[in-house]
Amino acid sequence: AWNNKLEYILAQVGFSVGLGNVWRFPYLCQKNGGGAYLVPYFILLILIGIPLFFLELAVGQRIRRGSIGVWNYVYPQLGGIGVSSLMV
Image (cartoon, rainbow, N blue to C red):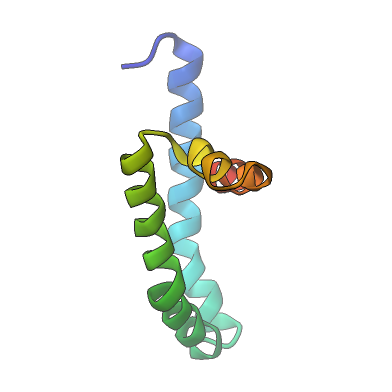
């Protein structure tokens, strides 16, 4: 539930833009070189991206903080990592 109409509209716009990019990404990869990009991308996603995601979730549950709070707790100057992951 949204508190006002503006929040609802912004959520719908964000969903629409994000979904269009998800469907367009494989087409653009295939058009511009295909597997030369996707193969290393998925290898690194599986080896680095997913484990780091679960590590952040586990640390967040352990110290009972969100994404930004986790990195601030680990090292105060790393708070920008949480902010940047929020933006992405």
